[in-house]
Length: 355
Ligand SMILES: *[C@@H]1O[C@H](CO)[C@@H](O)[C@H](O)[C@H]1NC(C)=O
Ligand SMILES: *[C@@H]1O[C@H](CO)[C@@H](O)[C@H](O)[C@H]1NC(C)=O
Image 1 (cartoon, protein in one colour):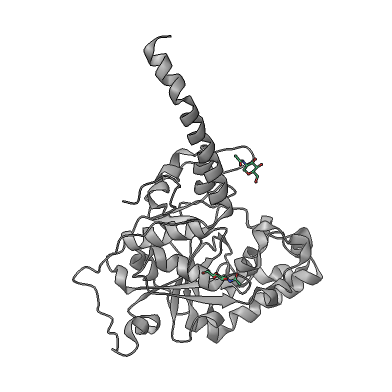
Image 2 (cartoon, rainbow, N blue to C red):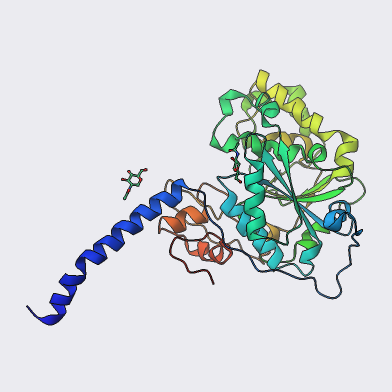
């Protein structure tokens, strides 16, 4: 037997053992908690406004500061890898990262201390709070006919920020967990809301607005009149700037809930948390530049179609749609643009060396 072959044979058991242990390892890590790497610390540039902390409460005053950028996101174990990447991307592209306050909303049934510990381990310097959202209260309002994975009660948390966040938080940027920013969030947060708008969001007037509501909605004059005198357009609720003071003053949570109550009695829309937002706000929002929502990158999981970027500049990449970049990367079937998400992935892979 030639020597190289002999060596190969001698090593074969070890190679097999290695392969076997790696598959076993992959299995156990999936069952176990996902482990995340620690992100670097990010610092304010010199011209950032300083948010004075009173010595007693340490970094707490940022949570009520008008100088801070307040970011609201939901947090759950299924999407935490996406949330981590989103947080990292926000910090990395911010010129005043230490002036960002994160408000995370988790389901009351989730292990909030575990979520808190996971965030702290990767972002030891992050200013954040975790709030719990009583999703059983909203579950009562979700009509069972439309209940699906898309429709988990935590999706409705965005209608309740005015109640969940402290009263002193007056403006918040809500972001989905399947996106990354490649621009300074302060620019998005500074979107002017004019004299009376409650929210700003990317608006799509070419989308077929009628599609979001049922024929019984449109054929009912008292209902379809909702949109009379309004230039109602579809907008994306995955990226929103919300004036919480105006929201509270106008009692918009109640208005959204009223539509949800109606939906339970007669079917007026198909999808879950979006149509009540459209009913209350469409035609009354401030449009956010589309660069802040390069959407649809999740593409189509059934046909495995990948989407390209829309023409124009990019400040935020949004993997809305069925496919998620982390799932496709794990399955070794990434779409080309998933390579833009990968640098923000903090997941600790079993064999990666801690650098
Ligand atoms: C990994 O887990 C799946 C399902 O939990 C099981 O079917 C498969 O046999 C496991 N593979 C190994 C190598 O343990
Ligand atoms: C929540 O997670 C912590 C680990 O951070 C664990 O010690 C605790 O038992 C968990 N609680 C529940 C109710 O699962």
